[in-house]
Image (cartoon, rainbow over the protein chains, first blue to last red):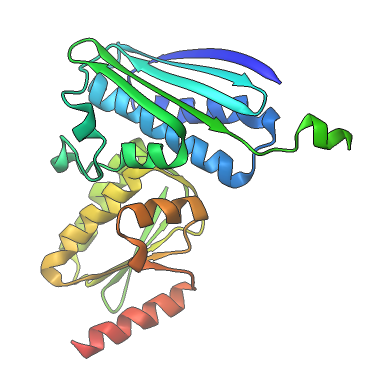
Length: 148
Length: 117
């Protein structure tokens, strides 16, 4: 099955749940396992929370855009913001690194995303924003095995 | 959603339901912290059996409360997380705090630890 979608929303915390729900609905036709859905939702949640909180500081006006493409049993996603950008991507991706220890951010977002996603990459320019790209392949009942 | 209950021997039982993300963690943080600071609390049991989803905000929430408890040498136990949550806890070094058991068994474990002090 092939499918494609784009979702844009303003940077408020409530939209973390919106993004998770929309993306969960979008992958449902792929018959993912409960574990796969749960891992996928976690990646989406981490990436979208980063954009809302770190990209835009929950300003309520700037726009986060999520784009997703399903090809066969693989989803390719981008989560983009045009916000603050990341000073040092390599450092940001280190486990436990956080710019906001007093806000109780665990610094585990990128570690979790990298562990649950395939081919995660991050492009960021200070003052211009951040794009997180990743893929995830699900292991559902395929068309071929359905016909057998 | 979170139900916070303090039982007689200074143990907080935080039963979480629904989805624990950054937004929800911000809502329940002060509630749990004030319980720790007002009571004679010596341990927190996080009952995650009914929690449908958690991201790294849950790690921040639990590590933050462990920090609150540190001066009291308090114990933290995390009960019955889903397998995805368990992976996230393991990435964060919280694996040793996980138990798959009933609340009663967890209370008994903490009771035992406190007695030895």
